[in-house]
Length: 74
Image 1 (cartoon, rainbow, N blue to C red):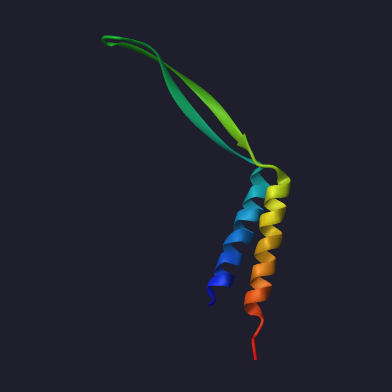
Image 2: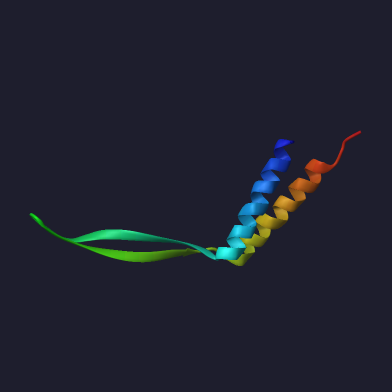
């Protein structure tokens, strides 16, 4: 398999995932109180939004790369 086709397939998969999930969520923990044996933490859920255009561009670019890689040169 040509490297350009492999990159295209990876872009297609990433584009579909970006369109499906619309963002990346993660949880961060912060220490609020740390006095000897007493500790208190606060968990905050944060989301990094991914615009749908980003997923569409990755998907379209992946398709173009796969088509270019599949063409046979004489």
